Amino acid sequence: MIGWPVANGAKSIEDLTPSAIRMFILDSRYAQGRSDRDRVREAIRTWHPDKFNQRLATRIAEEDRAAVKEGVDIVSKCLNGMLASASK
Image 1: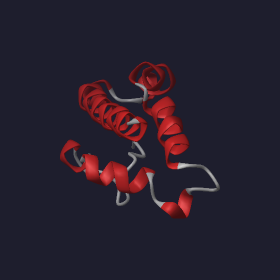
Image 2 (image 1 turned 60 degrees about the vertical axis):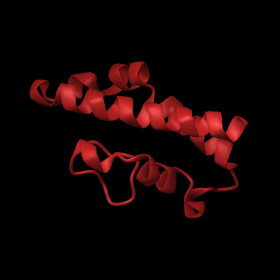
Image 3 (image 1 turned 30 degrees about the vertical axis):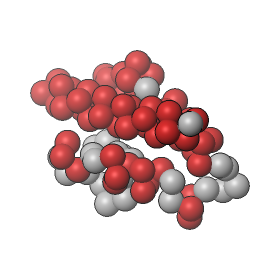
Image 4 (image 1 turned 180 degrees about the vertical axis):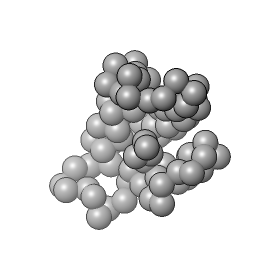
């Protein structure tokens, strides 16, 4: 099971919405003194498709890999959009 970056867990790809991801990543309860930008950058490193694939691809069942890849791509694009918005 993947610990997707949304508050209530994701049961499907449709649960990985930009607003749900943003709320989870920027939740002040988990800030631990880090800025929003730092938390987004850390999440980008965690959810980068290549890094994710290196760490976990062999642990994911073959029949689930396409869906997991799609989810990781959604999360990665959202996080990159958040970082771009923060940089403006």
